[in-house]
Amino acid sequence: MHMGKDTIAVAPGTTIHEQIVITPEIANKLTKVFGIPAAFWLNMETQYRNDLKQIKN
Image (tube, rainbow, N blue to C red; front, top):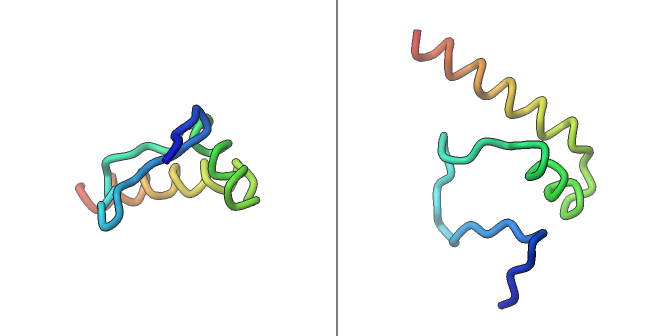
């Protein structure tokens, strides 16, 4: 399988919980794959991180 610079690879069955931060670069790649705007992914990341802070406090 060819893995180019626009490839996001996650092994099947791998859990990415708290391991990957959605950066603008990753959000743009997700936009190319799913057609969902990068702002959506970045907002979801921000909300997720805020929720984690509340849970841990």
